[in-house]
Image 1 (tube, one colour):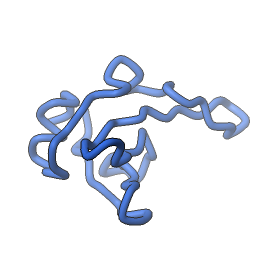
Image 2: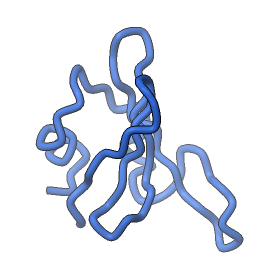
Image 3: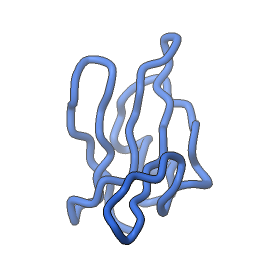
Image 4: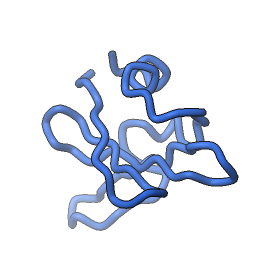
Length: 77
């Protein structure tokens, strides 16, 4: 699996991207914790909320935005 990186959207949302630039989800600050929201795309490019390669990790909770922990817990490292 590819290494994941974060891209800031705003103070409450970070995009989760593979090292190939594929958008696989978002981390959203909800009730003082970061929740991973998986994202997939169909063959037309339409968004599939909760889909994609990390669908089984949808709603994983993180206390901080630590890329090493995110990679370890999402299983991409």
